[in-house]
Image (cartoon, rainbow, N blue to C red):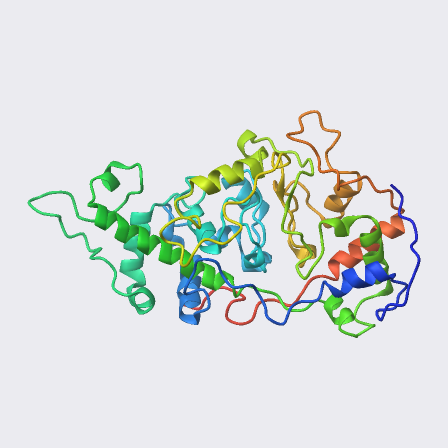
Length: 399
């Protein structure tokens, strides 16, 4: 496919944009209302919940080894992404940025979580990440954040090691999760109480992550009338982006369709490579999904998600806001630079691979660009970097 010129029509943005390009550009503007309401989280907009969640997010004591924290893979010094050496040591997938992540309908690359708080719980009990368990998490809250927690959610259960009776094991063992003998030894009401504490920690983390949002970018300033906010190269890059078909999947304020597409990105892990197909299986089996007892309010109308024959090997379309500072790219983090991932898309993805899982989405077509046009497209993408989150959500908490 070649990038051809288009008939121009009057556009208030100038720079030779035609009517379709003009409409697409205007749709990129950030909404004044901010993020959509949280799903299933009654404390998502409370500042005290966000402050509690922020403390947990940065506290390595919630991991089994006391040296892994949420910020290990979502470091504010790296635009809330993870350094390659860290995520490669833990997981087969890269750590997507948390910047504006709570605007996503489905979380994780494969969409296996349907709320921000459900996503936040997964790493705690994943042996390849924090390697902890919900009983340990509850004890940590009791020992270190009792006042903050109880100010939000009410009294904690008596997580102080009191024996059940007559020399029996503690009523609340130090460690345990579903499937463990220690967990099975607990009374059902006590297991439910620990589940509630665990879920509330996730809801507080989501309240924090909803504040990890970026402000307008130079390209937003251009859209709002400052014609000198970006160079002519970036404006040309926006036209090239649209005419190359990139806008089929990248549009709206977050420059994403929120859907799942198979690009043919190499993935050596057979389970991971299944993408959205496996993600839906995990979501439906998750005790913390929208159909579960911990979801505040009724399940959303789009739950359970619809399945498709194109789910195999498909991964969530990332937002392109801040894409210039959130390397590496692709769900495996295989592409180190913005130019690398642009070239992968321009070649039509990985459709030529002999080990391809599923079928590359037909929306991704090969595009031939000259060097100057490729450079302009990259300049446009770099002009999408916004200002950082507001204080105090922009960096590590003061102790």
